[in-house]
Image (cartoon, rainbow, N blue to C red; front, side, top):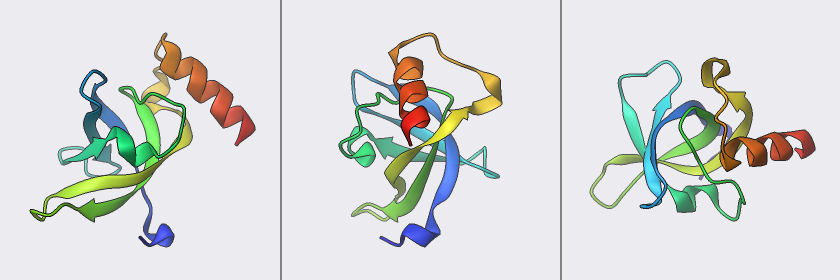
Length: 97
C-alpha cells in the first residue's frame, strides 16, 4: 500500500461488539467506507464515533472500497469528545505521537 496516498476522515458509525464501522472521507461525507478493527493494526485504541483517522483506501475481493492501515489523528470531529475509554486512550496516544 502506498503511504503517500493516505486520506483523512471521521468514523461516523462504529459497532464495537462486531469490530467494524464506517468512515466518511473528508470532502465526501455522503460516501461511507467500511473499516474493520484489523485496519488499526496493533493499536491499543478502540475506535469510536467522531474519531479522526488517516487511512489508505483499498478494495476487497468483490471490488468494494474500504479503509485500511488506519492511524489516529489528534482530535475528534467538530470538537465532540466522547466520555468513554476511547477518548482517554486517544488523548494519551496523541500526546506521545
